[in-house]
Image (cartoon, rainbow, N blue to C red; front, side):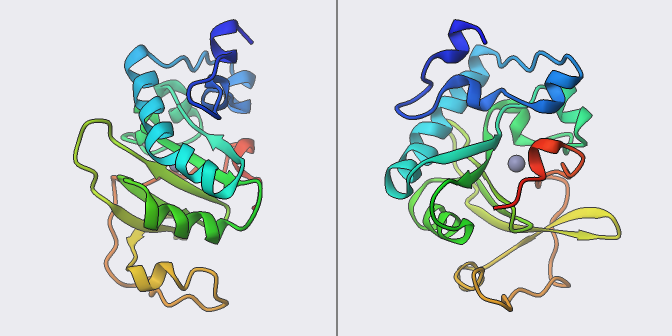
Length: 190
Ligand SMILES: [Zn+2]
């Protein structure tokens, strides 16, 4: 690992945490953010991840930046915010995924917050822009990953045995998260 990647990007997060990928290593993909993409990752840290780290303890970055080649290699959505350094997939090292999701939902300026199959939380932030403040769940249908907006009430039911969402209601497509089940980085369960 080079010296640059060993530096802190923010108070608690190192640069390498946002670039490391088993798929990239296996396929010899460099996965190197531009300065602009580093700026975006730093904004994501400062606005969303550091506050969560302070409140909830250590967080594991399951997937951060993805260059186009890596994003394609793992079957990511073509317009994934991971490509721009605007998104990270996060797992709490302490507490539950539900706690992390609810805390982020209530406390930080996110663009998209996605409940990803109960395995990780996707959060994005767009630097110096309006945040869409979309809260979504990802689910599978006919082998495709689809995204559905959920309400505040549904967010607070995530930890229950029978959450109150209904998968046949309005579905948004295209701009959501991506199907990354082929990536060994993302098979980890919370
Ligand atoms: Zn993601």
